[in-house]
Amino acid sequence: MKESKNSWDAILQKAFESARKYEMKCTGCAQTTIAGIFDALDIENDDVFRSASGLADGLGLTGDGSCGALVGGAMAISYLFGREKKDFPDMFKPMRSYMMVKKLHDRFVEQYGSCRCYDIQKHLMGRTFNLYDPSELEKAAEAKMYAHCSKVAGTAARLAAEIILYERNRQKGEK
Image 1 (tube, rainbow, N blue to C red):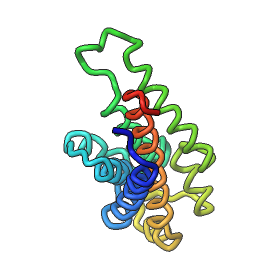
Image 2: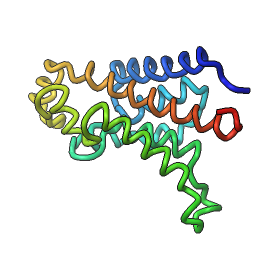
Image 3: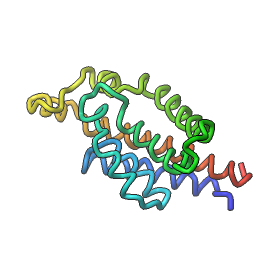
Image 4: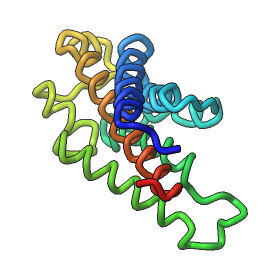
C-alpha cells in the first residue's frame, strides 16, 4: 500500500527527531543516524547498529574521514537494498544501493558543502576539533558541537529515510 504524504512526512520527521535526540544524549553520529532511521521505519537490527560503533567523527574520532552521520545513512540504505553474500560474484548486483547512496551523498554535500567531517565542523563551527584532547573536547562543547552534530545526524537520517521510502514505493510500482 502506498504511504500517504502525511505518513511520509511523519516518518521523515521521526527519523530526524530520533537521530537528533540520540546524538544529543548518546553521541556517535553513525549509530545515532542508524537508530533514528530504524526507529522511524520500525526496524530492529543490533548487528548493523553495532557495526557503526567506530565510525563517529570522521572514523574513529579522527575528523579526517567521511561524516559518520552520512556513513550511518549509507549503512541503513545498504542494509535494506545492498548485495547479499550469495550474490557476491555479481558485480552489478549492488548497483541499486550504489545509486541510492550516491543520491544520499549528493543531497548531503549540497546541504553541508562536503562529506568530510572536518570540513563540516569548519563550516558549522568555524574550526575543527581533536576530540582525543580534553581541552579540545571542552572547546567543542563550548562551540555547541553536540547541537550542530545532532542536526547533521537528524538531517542524514531524514535524507536516507526519504530515499528508502521512495525506493520501497518504486519497487511496489506505486511511485
